[in-house]
Image: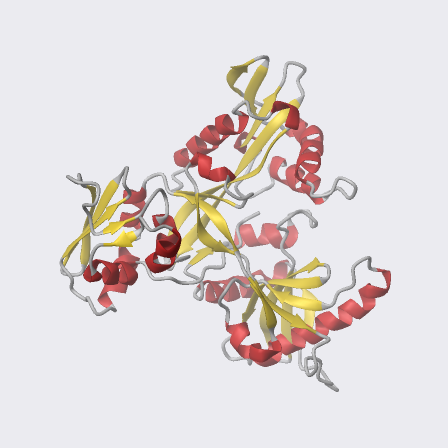
Length: 437
């Protein structure tokens, strides 16, 4: 049963959802989130139903917020999808607000803000240290977010490019859809894949079983795991989605004892064969493979000049309500980075000036012994300055302070040692985070 959270005035009531909302809420999300209402995205209806069903590993009706008007009609809604991510090898809880929308007739009444407050409180009650959302430009900065974590991007492999489709008499590999019996191999491969990403999502058997054999396919973010086999067994896997005019490869992992280049080229040929079967009836013809694996992945080196058309990425909105607590949580990573650097054994403070807030990292003989507030006497005091929430881009490896400084001149380090230490503790590094849907 739904629970009233608060009355908002003008006959509007904010409440949790109920499984009986599935039809209306599904229709609401299709109408508000479809890019083209002439071709509505029915996957949004399936996604809503899945999240309300009680079958999802981390989401139930209580994780939805709903605003209804005096007539009992849903006019605004959102949901929190809880999951775990890792920063290198340190795990932390993440709350992912999603399906945030308001009927146009009820916008600019603060309904999203009311719901974001509730979703943030629910995330905090679950012990989640970060909230993250993919969304339209600028909008979620209103709620304490910064576009601080890499999202998307990749490289294109065109079949029509000379030399990209070699004639192979007999394939060494085969591709098939993954099933529940493949979960142990997928988990093993996913662990190896995560090692190449500074931030990654954590999938256990329950989550993976949901993605392989539980969720309704066709929803935005549905996973389509495919196993790549050879005569010795599972050689790797690929998560492949149809994005006409391309096949999108959103995840690709190959066992270390298998040749990545050979497996990747097999995959491009196999997808070309699939394109030849689909294209005669397709509105948009499939013409290439998009390796949507962020800005860094070993397959880019394996295929090298056969790839072209670098596609720049977007960014995750991230929010870290307790920055000091999160930095302390990352203590093992930060100390390990320092121990492997030119400043091994360093003792001192790194004072971060966020202009309206001030935080310092206290180091003793290479150990992080504290993360504390400090009080400047002048606005220019401190070792490194970050306006607003720009530090989150450095924390999550998306940008260096030098890159930020070119856009924000009030983002800078006051001395060379502080900038070197900042680079050591928070290096720029690629992340490829595919969330739990």
